[in-house]
Amino acid sequence: MANKVYPLWMKKVVEGNGPFWAGALWKAVLVDVSYVYDDAHEFLSSIAGGDRVATSAVLSSVAVLADGVINADPAEFAAFTGADAPSLVVYHDTVGADSLKELALFFDDLTGLPVHPANVPVTMNWNTGADKIARL
Figure 1 (tube, rainbow, N blue to C red):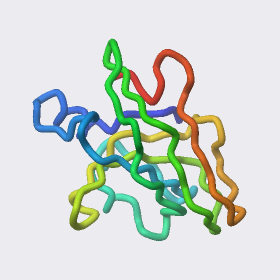
Figure 2: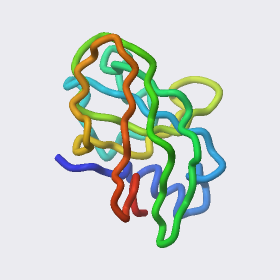
Figure 3: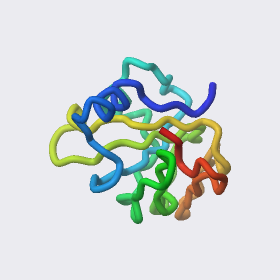
Figure 4: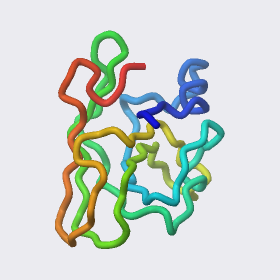
């Protein structure tokens, strides 16, 4: 597979129904091999709790750059153990149930993936090229 933008989030952004990248709270979740990306997935509740290996702190320095490029500081994960995580999902962190937290981006081709938990903090760096996290 390849890195993907969840189409239901992109549709909302294009229609002006957000959540927009800048000004919102975003987190990343490392997921194990049991999670299978699907274009129909819209909310964090689409990822079973048992498939979530670790959740990052809120992403900082979230910004929209020229030409629709989105960026943020690296995703920081506190020390954790568990299953290997071959993928990472970025989602809109809101107050309330997982059924309200919108999925935005899926990565399975990112330097540092797969993550092999070793009970140490993990930093996931985004692409350093022109497209940074993603070009929308």
